[in-house]
Image (cartoon, rainbow, N blue to C red; front, side, top):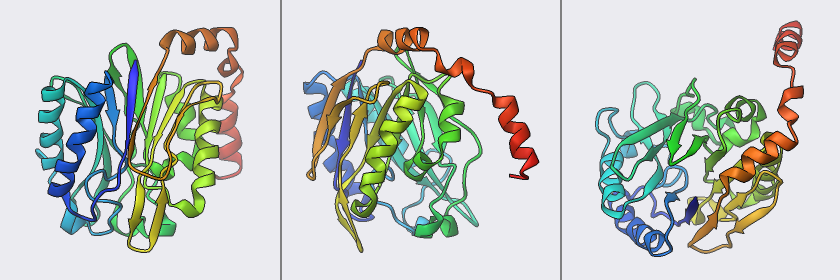
Length: 265
């Protein structure tokens, strides 16, 4: 499967202008014969703490309707992030849409970023999400979720590709790069980390979007500018590697639960 990461610089809280800017990435993805294109976290607004301004109703959100139309128009699977408006707290979401315009999965970020005040405005989700993209099983997480390996271990027995859209600031981008590789190696799957570039309010973003294979090798690595990163993924490689080096059979989830209970975690 050929995937494409749209490393963008969204205009701040300017959804409709960003819809127009996103289209050139979809055009390029089609020209480069990608099947699945992924945008960063809060794709069309930036990482805003104003859900009352950028949020959308749970029923027929505008961003999903727009990208459902574009997925059908371009014949692409598309992953994109948006905000579901709720009271008293909203949800940071990431959806994957089929080339027929069907919403395949719509994940709620499990770990709001307390350090960045996200948890003041956004509630955390409580479920994992999976969908089929062709023959692949794909699971999305969002940005800060990357720091919590437990959920990746729960997802990876099913998922051959885990996608991590982000708005990860330059100050800590070294962590982003290291953790993407670690999650790929630990879970014996492909990891796609889709970050943004540019500046927003007081933060700078250096991109560094990456596609990493199950051995921890970089297949694509973005620079500091807007660009479309493309790589070919091999499903047989994932399956054969898991068969020849079956590390997961040695995990002890029941013991881990007992240890956590004993430590009152």
